[in-house]
Amino acid sequence: TSCHGFLGEKNALGKSKPINGLTEKETFTALVNYQKGTMNKYGMGALMKSQTAGLTEKDMEYLAKHISSFTKK
Image (cartoon, rainbow, N blue to C red):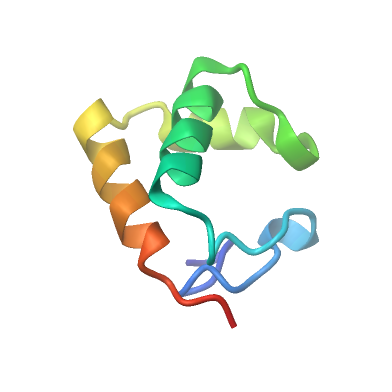
């Protein structure tokens, strides 16, 4: 929540676009690719790789489903 906001409404560290409004598939794919180290959107690859390092696939599925429920404001 400190980076993306409680409902994904913030630009993380002033760099990324808000994550609210992303689909479950978009979010899951991003999490997987950040974890693999193959995604560096907005220059956040290293930070997001460390944030996702301890997540299981089930964790990422749950997060993607939860984040996709946020309403874009």
